Length: 324
Image 1 (cartoon, rainbow, N blue to C red):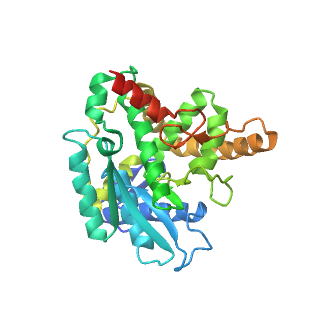
Image 2: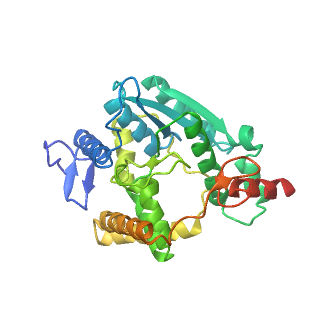
């Protein structure tokens, strides 16, 4: 199998496009799509200057997605005085897993001379995910606890670092799964909120001062291609899966989409193309109708984070864990 671009040995066949690519042209393909997404989403504030730069916090876990995102953004903007970047790693307290991925984060940040901050559940909440999984006071999947805690820390520290944007390494597979879950749950309001939270171009979103806005520059790139990209570029990457990852519903959706993609190449791209257009329409509908407004946000009386209730979800989970 030869590369369509140069005739060298191909390492990947992208069935959705028919392309056969060698390592170098796979690299160029991934980087081109990320750069295009950066432009289309207006990621860089047009008013940013060297004196008043756009500040980006990158959620760096050490996995393939966040490592690829960090490297590509550094290649493009690392010497641009209009952008300040900082990598933020969350240590959940999972023995034999997060320490190894933290090593990859530290190595990458050092290679790029990138400011790197690490915060942990243990220091912030006095809990470790290994212990939470063992006690499981709410009878939930580990990811349900971890997602709440992780989002809280990403939002807290992005705000503390005075970030203008919070960037995460969600890929095409991740986003297609989320889109399908929202569709199947009939959650149109969540579809609308998704547009303003992380999907829409920044110049089309309805802004909020409650949270640092998010962006997902990898969301056009399939998971497999990101893994190959990291291999081709010899990036320090921790490839193991979290031992506690067991989201049954998302797993079913993942399997369904994988089968669709196998039988109908391009299914993931089609899902996201339609979903992004519908999310924009839903967001506009809820804004104009006035009946889709989110509940007023207040400060959690325990920790001060933004919530629609007196006590935020994170603090309620911590109470349940402490009570065991």
